[in-house]
Image (cartoon, rainbow over all chains, first blue to last red):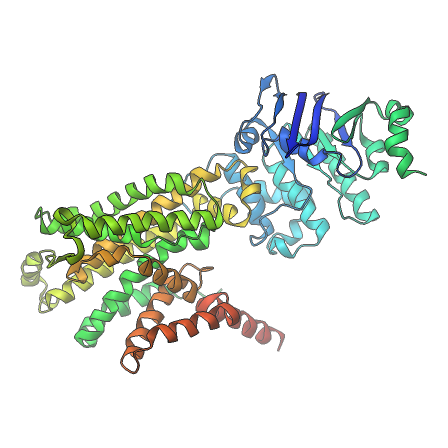
Length: 246
Length: 326
C-alpha cells in the first residue's frame, strides 16, 4: 500500500532523516517509534508532501507520489492527523467535519448554494462515531485536548482515506484518555478497513496494537519488524528501550 | 419560533427613502456610504473570511473607477456596459497581481499587494493620454435617466427627483445586488473553504483544499467587487483621480473593515457608515481628523478587537444569557 524508499532530508547540514525505507502492507497497523528528535514527524511530513525530500521516493498504491502537493495526496486516499492539534478552531465541531466532506467531495467551488444543509447526515454519523455528536454546535477551539484529538481523527476520516497517518495521536493525553482514544482508533480502523501508520511515544500502546514497528534513531532506521523482533533487537534495546525501561 | 426580522431588507428600504425624506446633503452622504460599504465588504472577503490582509485593495477600486470613467467619457459607452466592465477589468488585474501575491504569506503578501497598488497608482498618475495623469478625469457623465420620464408617464411617483437622486437609487440597487451576491458567496461551500484557510491553512491543505487556488479566487472576487464599487464611485464623485488607488485609500477601507468588525458580514458596511459620518461631523469642528482617527484606531485595537458589530453582538449575547438565567 505504502512504500518509502531511501527518503532523506537535511536542514542546514543537520540530517533529520537519512535513507529511510520501509513498507506498510494493506490493512495493517504499523508504527514508527524513536526517541525525541529521531525524525518521526519530519518523516511524516516528507511522506505527506508537507516538506520536499532531498532524496528518495514515496510510492502509494503503486504510484510514485514523491513531492506532490498535500491536497492532491489527500484526494488519492491518504489522510493524516498532526502532532500539534490541528483543527479549525473558530468553527464549530460540526463545521469542522462538514468542511472536510465539502472539500473531499469536490463541492468547494460551488459559490452560490448555502453550505449549511450540505452533508448533514454524513457529518452527524461521523460525529457519533468519534463520540462528539453531543458537542456538535460547540466552537471547536473550546473542546478539551482529548476532544480536539477526536475531532481531528473525525476530520481525517471524513476524507474517506485508505491509509491513515497519525502523528502521536495520544500526545498530551492522560493514561485514561490514551486508552480510550487508542480503543477508538483501533475500532474505527477495523470498521473502515483502514491501513494505519502512526508514531507514538507510549510503548505500551505501540506494542499492543502494531503488527509492524519501525524504529528510528537519529534519522535512521535501526530496526524494522514485528513487535517481538523489535523487542529482542539488541540495537533497539541499547539506544531506545534501554533508556526508557531502566 | 419567532420569525427573524429581515433587517437587511428594512435597512435597504430605509436607505431607499433617504432622498424623499432628507436633504440633498444626506442623499450625498448616503451615496458615499453605500459605495464604501461595498468596497469594505469586498475587502472583508479577503481579510475576514480568507485571513489575507491586503494593504493595496484601493488598486482595484481605482481600476474600476478609471474603467467606467474612460469607457463613458472617452468612448461614450452606456453605463450598462461600463459598469460591469469595471468589475471584469478589476477582477482581471486582480488575477494577474494575485497570481504573484498568493505565493507569499502574511506580511510579505500584504507588502506585495501594496507594491502592486502603488504601481497602479503610478500608472494612473503618469499615463496622461489615457488617465489624464495628475489632473485626473473630471466630468464623468451621469448615466442617462431619460427613460425615467417615460416610466413616469405611467407611474407618476417615480418622477420628480434630481439626476443625483436617480443616481443614488441606481447605486443603491447595484450595491444591494452586489452585497447579496457576496453574502451568498460567504455562506456557500466555497466560502466555508475560505474560512478553513483562514483558520488553518496547513490543515486546509490536508482536507484537500488547494489553498493557493482558493486564495487566488477570493482575491479575484474581492478585486472584482472593489472594481464595481470604484465604477459607481467615479460617477458619483463626478471625476476619477489617481488618489483613488493611493495607499491612503487602501488604509481607509481597511480601517472601516476593522472598525465595523471583520468577523461579521455586515461589520465593514457599518464601519463605512460610522467612519464617514464621524469624519463628516468632526471635520466641521476641528482640522485634526487624522488625530481623531488615530485615537479611534487605538481604542478599537485595545478595547473592541471585534469592531463595533463584534462588540454589539457580544453585548447582545451577554444580555440574552442574563435574561435566560433570570
